[in-house]
Image (cartoon, rainbow, N blue to C red; front, side, top):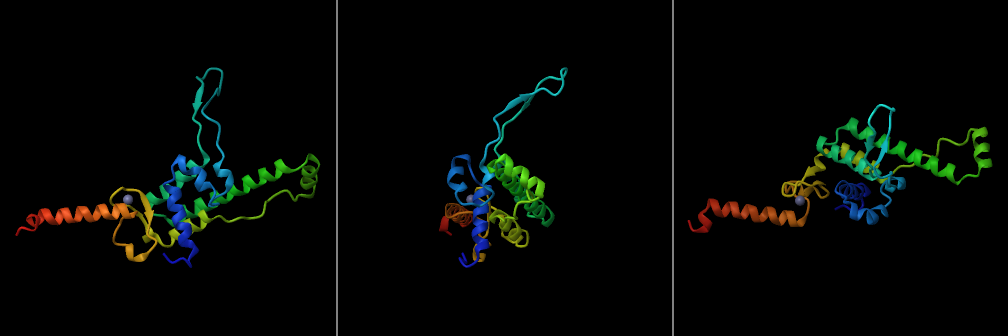
Length: 194
Ligand SMILES: [Zn+2]
């Protein structure tokens, strides 16, 4: 991997994010890869009543990071089309701005809040960019790097161009591919007895 290129580092983090499991969230969240607010939890499942006659509706609880992860998984399946990448980059920006705005408001005294409203200096918060956006952007113009592992089917990205043909996400999968290839060769050649 070319360590001088930070984009490839962002791409590896995006691969970790697209495959992230709930038990690894705490460790991953320290990487500052996407807006902090994404690690907050929405309420567990709850029931709402829309009208007196309608049966109560069950709303499932969800994790904000998982809704973002799902969108990245979809990008992988679709092969990072430019439009869809742009949409997600913009969505992440909106999310970040809203989260920042809320944080500001919560930290302000009522007086200060009123003053900022009067002066019209409350919004918008300063723009921020996140590594997740850079990684998505980078892959939208380097789509050949976007892959699914031919052994375990996990999404991954090609970091070093010379590994392009291998089609495997990790060393264990590459070893497994080698074993299968040798087995196929052996079967075809009567296990070397010809
Ligand atoms: Zn694999």
